[in-house]
Image 1 (cartoon, each protein chain N blue to C red):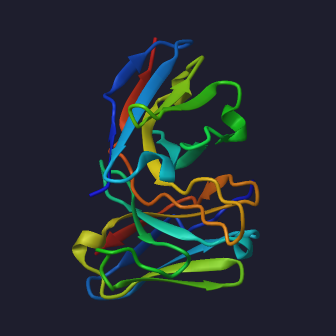
Image 2: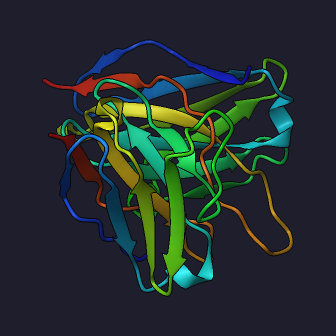
Length: 107
Length: 125
């Protein structure tokens, strides 16, 4: 399988915009998904199929893709957005792959 | 609403086996697959494998093949994950998550849209 690379950490002030990138050579082949995980909790999907938002996820969460990189953007960051974020995709054999994870700190 | 309820925490000795259950509710069990994901303390997410609840087809991560078995019981709508020959580095929180079932034609979707709360498995002598 292949690797998905994320920055280890992103720091942002409340109300500002956080952008988290996820890069992988095989990303163009399949959709990417994003998950938020708060301490002691299970992950929650916040973006599916690159840029779609599940019901109940705030509009400030958005996703985009450019070539071999997908990006999760959190606009107008709030204190409650402080969490770990993981991207995820798969290879052509149905093997799921997670990104390395990014810790978002709200200053 | 859709929920996945997992079995309770386990403490095992090296070399033993563990079997974790996952019981979904809020949807028809056989219309989705189940994936298992684990997270070692302070680490990222590791996908372990997937089972199609309708056919029983499985796809395991290469590094766990030979030690891992995923099964389902459609009579009780429950999925199971068994890991054998446990080592200390198998200590982790184990999650089940709803995934698509078998997909025959593209586009293919590989997602985990609803997760269980996790089962802590500790392996120590």
